[in-house]
Amino acid sequence: MSIFDSLKKSESYKKLEEKKKIFSKKAKKIKKQYDDNYRENVNNEIKSFLLKGKKNLDNANDKINIALALANERKEKIRKIKEDRLRQKEIKKEKNKFSNLSFPKKIKRLALYFLLFVFLGGAIEFSINQGIYYLEQNLQELNRKRLARLEWEHTKRKAIESVFNWVEDKVLMFEAKKIIKNELNDPGSAKFKDMNHVKINGEEYITGKVNAKNVFGGYGEFEDFSIKVDKNK
Image (cartoon, rainbow, N blue to C red; front, side, top):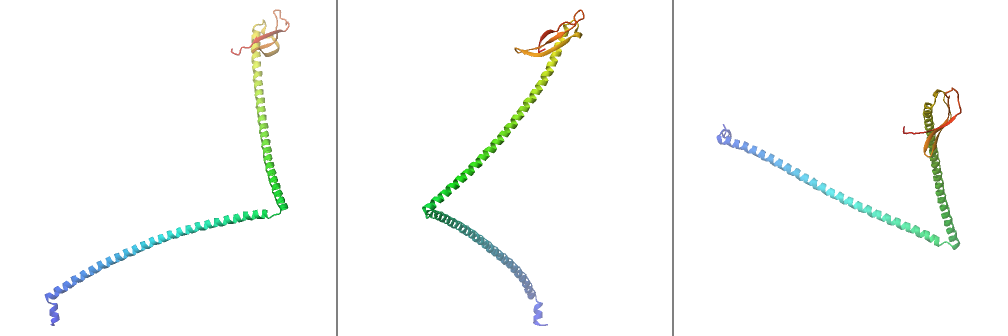
């Protein structure tokens, strides 16, 4: 047996091996904790870096948008200034063109403008007159239709009134005949003629002539009668 083998079997060697295993476990545990903390720190640093980068990118985009808006606004102002200058140049050109004309040409130009103005005024007046004419025609047509409708309603009302009056006259004459017959000796032989419904001083009467057999059984002459109408009865 060698010295190394005897050393392995000794108690001190065994304790040393056990301490070595315990130390190895602790070392692995510490290394694992260190690795975990290191990864977490690295991840946090990466996240913070990305957030800062995104924030800086957003700020840069905002600045770019503001710069673009200012550039567009300036471009629009320049375009309007150019348009105003071109318009002023055109107006000045027209003025110069008219002022450079000779006197006869100016007269012709003014006469042409006057004729054009008169023509446009005549066309506008003609259009207005035509509109007024058509409006009057439509109004006349509407009035004609309205008058025709009123006339028809008046005729219809008159016809209805005449029918009612005729019926009323027949009823009143029938009642008058009954009254006259009650006063005769022979009511069944009564004959009537020339019966009318008249109005005198706001009062209404049924007038006519009647003839009936007398006590000797013969007819005499027709006699006039008049009965006052009392509609309240």
